[in-house]
Image 1 (cartoon, rainbow, N blue to C red):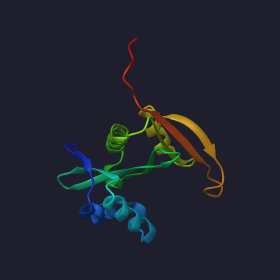
Image 2 (image 1 turned 90 degrees about the vertical axis):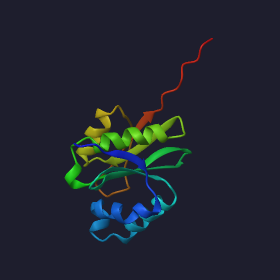
Image 3 (image 1 turned 180 degrees about the vertical axis):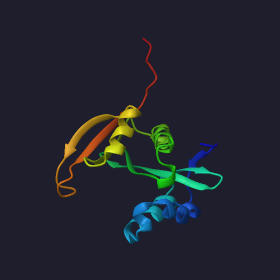
Amino acid sequence: MDEFVVRRASESDADALIGIDTVAVEGSDERQASIRRWCRQGLAIVAEHASGPLGYCVVEYTFFDQGFVTMLMVAPAARSQGVGQLLLHAAAASCTTPKLFTSTNLSNHAMQRLLQRVGWAPAGLLHGLDEDDPELFYLHRQQTEPTHP
């Protein structure tokens, strides 16, 4: 893939991110509103190329006061090209807590492979969010500086 940059999304990026989000494109008013809120609040990180955005992720701190990747979306045409991996690394680098979590449905094998490939560890399984499709939680422990006696 040609050069691309990762940066904090701004409110002016919302329409472009809606345009690459498969759920928002299908007409989900709720997802579109979330994307606008994430951009307005400075919570979204976008990966873009000269042609426009390739993907975005969102880190929030409402999960037991720890970082949580609430959303990771890569445009269908940009999948399997390292964009998701780059966004997860950017999320970890920007996280202000010692632990960063995320989750995905048991049926989402591509996301599970991505998380395992970049070193996230399984952290638990939750039933009841989506009928017949449990949610798998993953943990990324932030690197800390070694302490010297």
